[in-house]
Image: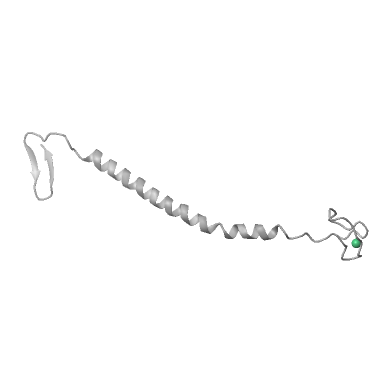
Length: 94
Ligand SMILES: [Zn+2]
């Protein structure tokens, strides 16, 4: 590397001029790859959020189906003399 200040020739391993102590500006070869990584983040982030939404929806449906199954008296015999409300489709035993 040649010092831009005094023109001293020296190996690239030095980040500072060995003659005039001029600090070389850092080579921005790695910064280009770092700048691209945040841009690619929103693209894969949209897919997990959508699948998480449908996953939560499936869990909600399964939970409501389980609750409906628990509250449905299927298989239970009807009482002897039930009060049946034909209009609203519900019956209670007195
Ligand atoms: Zn120098």
